[in-house]
Length: 635
Ligand code: WT7
Image (tube, rainbow, N blue to C red; front, side, top):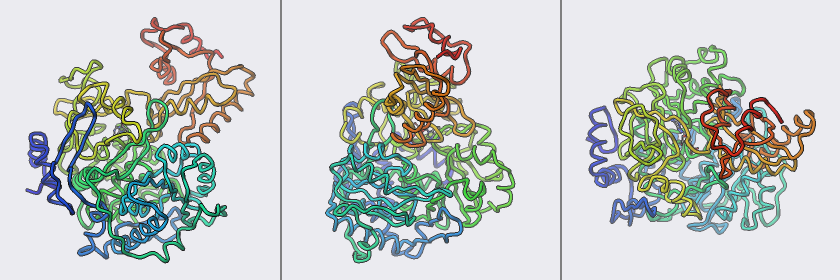
């Protein structure tokens, strides 16, 4: 029996049992079976969730790009590594082979070195979904620089916060990005951000849209001419197992974004292992994950996991609605995609459109469907199953987080019987537990609990960059000795898990994780605003959308308020990005607060959802009368 690849349900149970009873032996055997190590580990695992400190494969040395690229060259040099599908379907797709990837990544790595980037330096990558994005990530990993990719939909303000937080010396960007029929001036956004980033001394610019850009002498350089002269060989930097690989920001329920720190060996082992099993990858597959590399899904399941398995992985620059709503189905038909991994929000948006967008395409190449990012509702699950999978492709509802690095709970396709809206069973090595608010373990079925994990797995984040205390407080303090996910979940009678949603102040909008605090901060900067509170409310396509309750300093006229609403969304776009815009704004005379001054979001959530009956106990409020005033629409 292979330790690396699970082939049937008995094997799953056997492997799972072993992974719980002898976790170190289990992960050691996985690590031995599939990867290239320059030096073997001296200890598989040491951990303490109270500190917290987690170390996997200590003493080992490796380079993740040797595992993702070099070792495939003997057998797969001419196999497509990345299949690039541009925004405009008229522009030809590009097949980048493993050999070409090797050369292009090494060239870029040599350019980074020639610009003075060394092991441990942080490099911020702000690029659209073009091959250079994946190559920049891998080039950093090749030389041991720590990449921090910022999704290219974030605003200049959000970009500057992230650049400064990780103290990035260099930014890699492009002249622009294509998004449907729009072009976005990425370089201009970087220029604005860098006004506030004194520590960033160089910018490399990829040419994509041929937008006119200003190049700041001494700071900005075009990448292409630098690549021309660069050598196609670059000896990998031998990294310690626990050396940082990347920082990726995720929203928190308070204050600034959290730079989740992931390290090298454990992340590699876990993402490769889960990719192989959750997608039952076979060598001829053409696998497509529609996420952006700016999110963890793209890091783990477009770049590292697939490449560590020698897979062909699609890089899609476009959006589902351009040139029309058949784009996904067109890409599947054109490239004979075998696995499609996408978000419930995309499924819901596409399910609303005419069915002949789907039926006019041949989707018979598909074998496995995946979803990620938020709970998938039953209706969307069935539409995906019936119309995209034609009832013959298992759906893997994969639950995980930026912090977990890889998928923790998911069916194995063709192996685990699926159940709509259930992420089903934990993957090997994962020990989920449900606890009540007092931290007592829930053993009953179908009782909503807080989802924790009792034991470390190789790709768990190691810290929050620059703020280990916050790491401890956010994830390891509420339920001592356990990792707290921030999610609620149920378990059914056979042990299947159903994720019910966030239990903190994070709201998942269209699969994007948004913290309420930074949005409220952006709103409160508007001179007319006294205070604000954001909650999520159910939305057909986005899953959750944002509802803002806003107190004005001066109530003004209704025309003023229309303008104000626009200005508030403008302020949010500038500070965070368009993904955080409010769908509904209600100006209110006050906010329900507890005696300690905390906003009672539970009540606001009910009002936002239109559930104004049975608001529960409001007697502990400092100002119970405000609830009725808000419901009445008083200003
Ligand atoms: C949060 C993490 C993991 C990559 C994308 C999001 C929610 C994620 C599922 C799922 C229900 C899910 C959780 C989680 N979530 N996948 N299959 N079912 N909820 O990463 O931005 O770090 O967000 O997304 O609430 O905590 P992220």
